[in-house]
Image (cartoon, rainbow, N blue to C red; front, side, top):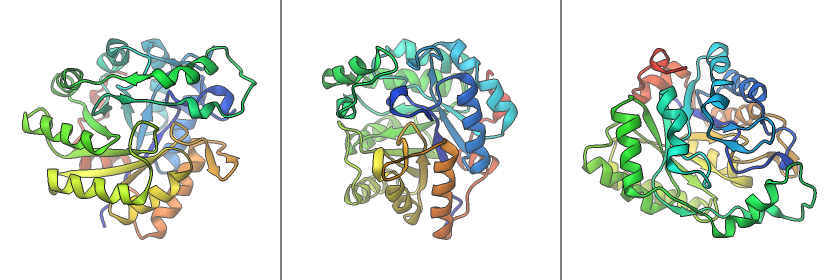
Length: 308
């Protein structure tokens, strides 16, 4: 099988600082964990920003600029900036940093959806910051908005105008049909890189049968003109990554998606998860792609064409 691309999602916007002392919040921690993940084998680094004072997800360009040059100087991994940001941000807020910083890759959620995080409240009563509990509790009435108009705007502004390629995040089967719609309109070209996002309450569950169905649907819609990767939120992270690798796909891990390395044991870093998934996929006979190999596979513009 072809080389396997490992993506590492370093911090995200879902988990809150009280959930793990190892979740990177400051620019220094985000940069150091990203570089360590790249050295462990991650070819792509999927990045969000946070306010270092509160740990809250941030759309501020200054917060991105505080860590991106350090990452670029410390490794040759592909930087993939979120256009999803946080479900509580407006589209303009979510796009501010990617538009200015012009990364090689961006994520793009392929539809609007319920984004229910409140089950993570659990029995916790001790919070480091006063925003965390309300943020999670109020997600029982939270919709992440990405309409066809929004998607078209991101494709034109980030793709056509700035040369970024996309990690198309598909949280359900309907998102694959939306992606096909934009391919038919000429706004999406190959190679198409699909990220099957599984296990978020509001999207498809992280179950093997669902991955089989997603893959079969993508095969019908895109033939051999796409590559797929899989992320599973929570405890199914590694089992679903192993299945994806066995199917010929690529994988994503990271503290954005799962705070643990094994049952009841917090991962101490993103690199620890990369090391674990690398051992799994190499055990299946897959070779891990370098950043330059991943750039060639994905048709990226190159690190010299970014804005940081």
